[in-house]
Amino acid sequence: IGDIWERVDFTVEDANPRAAWCEEARKQGGGGGGGGSGGPRSLTGLMNQNAGAITNGANNSGFDKGEGDGYKWSQNDEEVELRFPVAAGTKAKYVKINFARTALKVIVAGQTLVNGELGGNAEVEDSTWTIEDIKHKGKELCVTICKKEEGRTWPFVLR
Image (cartoon, rainbow, N blue to C red; front, side, top):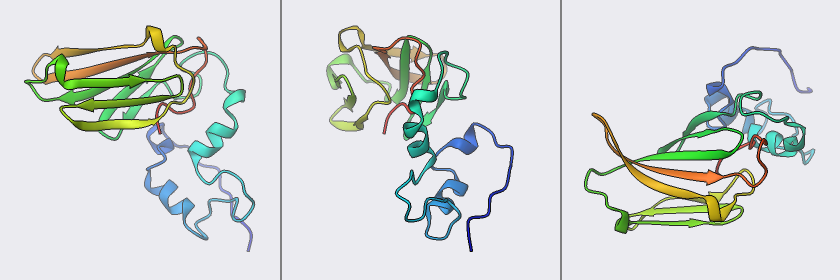
């Protein structure tokens, strides 16, 4: 039996690779296609394969904002911003961030919050971070990654 394809409408949240339907599709016989074909096994893989086809502008593909594991992110033509909730007593001396051209590592008070590959090339010298007081919500660590290729929407932010 071949794959059964069905046209459906879905939201940006449904495009999250952790969505239930994506998890099911990745299982053997789950209808994810590409079984044994060597093709992309996830929506992220498909987006990475087709990254060159994404046109300029932050809002044309629905990848302008979202949530990761423990953080929220947004992107526009010039930068990607990640926001992490941190403890009220967090000071700059507790934060260690390693910006690299294609990777990011964020450590707060000895705990690694993220350590992964970026969805595009960063302009390391222009990237920065701040700790911000958010009214009635506590503090947030705001990491701003400047894009090397301005105008290009990253197919993913961090993995």
